[in-house]
Image (cartoon, rainbow, N blue to C red; front, side, top):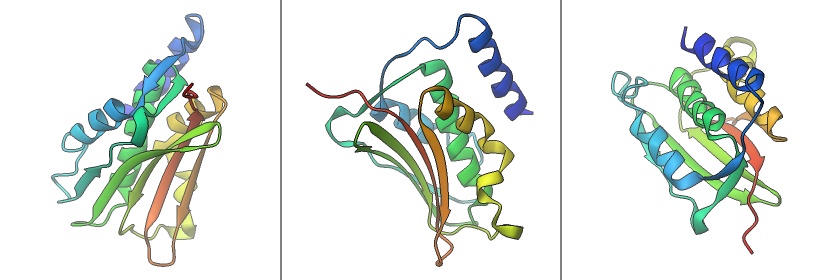
Length: 158
């Protein structure tokens, strides 16, 4: 149900004049997502969520009304596939003209057909990334760790 509400929010933002981009500092945004982890179900699964503050005041050029729920969506996807008692790390780093928000899970449940990229919960994050000129990627390692990455245009430091 929450996915539908967030998709509706994105549709309303777009129909009400489109994106209103601003410089969004990733440190506070990631801290906010980490604080929401308990409400998103981390406590029930006994999952430890660690937020790693990005270096150097990393910022993206994005619409905060869209990027906040997109980052929460990455965290919700990570919680969905996390094994009980595992650790999730939330962080961001600069990569050329993009900043990459990464949510990694030390122990992912194996999904039938390796469907990690197709999780419905990632739809909003995928749409948000595309609208901002970025992308969403996922990967699973042989050790059953997995990672969700949201790349968005980075604000260049002068």
